[in-house]
Image (cartoon, rainbow, N blue to C red; front, top):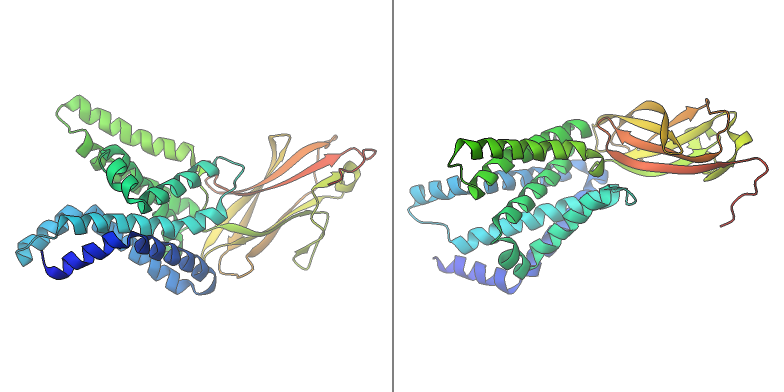
Length: 339
C-alpha cells in the first residue's frame, strides 16, 4: 500500500469525528442554500448522487481500477469511503427531514430511523462491529439512506414534484434491494427466486402504503393560520378555538409553504371534522419565494352542528403530510378555554 494512503487511513482512524462533522456542516449548509442560493445546493446534491453511483458500482470500479493501473485499492480505504458516503448522505438529508417532519404523526418513525442510522454511521464500534457483520441490516441502512437522499436531491436538481420524486426514489430502492437481497440469500432454486421477487415487491408496496409516514423533504410550512379573514395576502389573528356563530361567514386556512426554486406543486387542504374528511381543496404552489408561497382556502359550508374538533391537513398529491392545522369549535354559550 502506498505510504500516503497508509497515512490517510491512519488519520481517519485517529480523527473519525472529522468526517461526521464535515457531513453535518455540509448538510446544514445545503439546507440554508436551498433558500438563499439554490444553485450551490444543487451542486451539493449532484455530488451526493454521484457518490451513490460509485457506491452501487463499487466492485465494478475497483476491478476496472486494478485492471488499468495494475494495483488494487486498499480494502480499509474502501470501507472508510463507504462509511463516509453514508455519513455525508445522512447528515445531508437530516436537516431537511427534521424541519419537514410532523412530529405528532407516523413521520416521527421515519425521521427517527434516519437519526438512528446517522448515529450508527458515526460510531465506529456500532458501524463496523454490529452493523457491518449483519449483512441484511447493512443493506437496509444502505437502501434507507439512498431513498432519503433521492427524496431530497431530486426536487432540487430536476425540479420534480414531491409525488414524482417519491415514485422514482421508491423504484430505485426496490431496484437496489433486489440484488442486495440476492447477495444475502443466494438464488439456488426457482422458488427462492420467486420469493426474492415477492419480497422486493413487498418492500415497494410497504413503502407506498406508508407514504404518509415519509415527510416531503423539500416542502415545509413557514407560516400557518386559521382565521376569519385574509386581507392583502395576510391572514387575521390565528385562532385555535372559535364559537359556532363565528364560522357562519366562512373560515380561512392560510399556509405559506417553502419549496425549491422552479418547483410547481399541487397540494391539498383537507378539512376534517372529528376525524372524518368533509372537504378537499386543491392549491397550486410555486417554489422559490423566501417567505414561502402564500395560499389559502376558504370554507363556507359547515355542518348544521359544527361543534367539535377540526383539522386542516396539508397534503401532497400522493398523500404525504406537509403539516396539520388544528382548531376547535364550541357552543356560543360555552366559555373559551383559558391557557
